[in-house]
Length: 338
Image (spheres, rainbow, N blue to C red):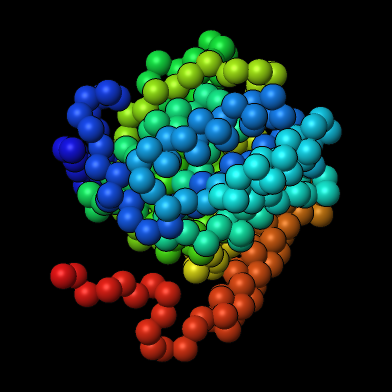
């Protein structure tokens, strides 16, 4: 593999095109946990899981497959139960209602016990044959690798919005990438605790891992047409994704220094308010009446709001300080390079 680096962005791993060379699955030594969230995917699971198991066995990997039923309304739960009965490597997790992909992934990750965790979608579009290639990339020094989908087998609207989303995400977060939302990913187990997945933040797993100090990259993989059923994609997901991007950026930038946000905004508003009041004072000295001037109320309001924002920022800093761990080895330490 070759890597291209950027000063402000994480380097991307570029693998040979699918089918070139034989990947060394031994790079993913230890137990491999494959986590698959599923919502109304009964028809696909009966084909995807056996294909996945066959691929992992041919690669001579020790593995487990954790399938999460995200409150499906079809026969998905019964299908998973049947797969559990027929194969000891399959484990099912059953959610009472549909919670969404991020909570489903969290439920699956809680059950996973492997040294390496692979994430896959249940619709059959992710090629199980790419899993050994992802494990090989982990063996080459990455902590998390995403399967970058070649020749996407999706509708034009989905491909277009996804391309725009990936471009905006890379620019805003500073993490180089072309397919952040690909459902096919592999990571070392140590990365999992750094992924605070809530809402729909599963789209930003590479970003969260990179910000936590882990090496992330992408490997080209084959993308296949959906086998059965219809896509869960809708245009609304694009806008929700942009809102989630704002959430991720906010948490990364201001979680440890909230005064920079609230205080900075307060100072700008306060200076504006003081400038308006100074102008009104000059106006008053020139003999003009200020009692019915809207600018007077606007200036006072800006100053009051500024004081409130700065106060909120200081209180937030107190909370952040109180939550800081005591000095000593902590989760942000990494092993000494060999």
